[in-house]
Structure formats: structure tokens, C-alpha cells
Image (cartoon, rainbow over the protein chains, first blue to last red):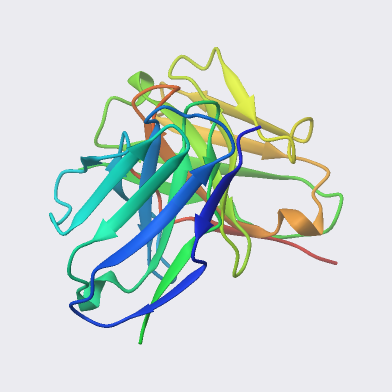
Length: 106
Length: 119
């Protein structure tokens, strides 16, 4: 089974900050990686797929990069609507989520 | 507009059974793989099961294998999961989600239905 590890688990940041979340896979997953945003009481929302492809309608301040075993999600300038929990997911072999990164207000 | 609407959640005793449904609309249901993902209270997302568009291929997480059965009725645009031998650790919000195929991310998600396993 492929394990996904996100870091950090919690991130405190201010509006306007550049934020980076890291996701590591226990073995190579090529670029079969997605990122989701989840707000309390809501379903997850797809942000990025295939490591760096931005889902339609998602603001361009979100970007993804990486391949193999190391991936990053970057928010270039954090907005009030971005305070949420973010999950990475591999879909190279079955499906596995990272444990999540909560982005909270500093 | 894609809509996924889960139903069937509730309180069930340990060892009991429950069937969840996910009614889909706004896309060609039979062309999409469908999945169940759960989230225990205060915890992260856990993939549970996936079924191909035709229903001919099914996949399960080890934690539910042998206890959960995923199925679909393409004539009714509905996804199901039959859950038996339920345990306290199955308590979670259960989401259904669609994907273009079996090696794809999850595109759209329903709002979830809560399953509570407790005596």
C-alpha cells in the first residue's frame, strides 16, 4: 500500500502570506496526485489534479508541483477564504489520502 | 450541474447493517467510476471503495473488505454500499464521489451522510 505523509499538520499564517504544503509518497506515484480543500462541515473540493493541473474555477493563486515521491501545494497570497484543511491524494495505485494540513489564522 | 446526494445514514448498533445510497444527476452516470470516502469525526479522509462505470470491477480498503459491498444501478443513476458487521470505528460521514475512470482523482463529491455505530 502507498502511504501519503503531509507536512506540516497545522500551519498558522496571515492573509497575504505565501503558503507551502508538502506531501510525500512512500513510493513513486509519477504525477498521479491531487489536492483537495475542505472547510468544516463541507465536502472536499478538488483544487489540483495530475500534480500541477488547476481544476476549472480554482483561483490561480493555487499551484501544485512535484513528481515521483515529493509534491507541494502553494498558495501564493493567502486569502480569507483559504483558511481550511488541505489533503493530498495519490491515485497511482488505488487511492490514498494524506492526513491533512490545517491552515489557520495566525 | 453535477449533483450527488447521499442518504441512508443513521444510528446502528455494533454488529448491525446499513445500506447507503448516492443519487446522481447532471452527468452520464454509467460512464463514471464511483467511490465512497469516509471521514471519522475530527479525522482525515479515508478511501473506502470504488466501482467501475459498468459495475464489473470493484475495489475495497482493507479496513472494510469482506464487510462492505459496493454496487450501482445505472438505470437509476444510483450508487450503493451495503455495510454489515459494523464496528464503532466505522462511525463517520460517508461521501460518494465520481471520477472519470479507475485511475483518476475524485471530481465531484456529495454532501455526505453520517453513520454512527453505537449501542
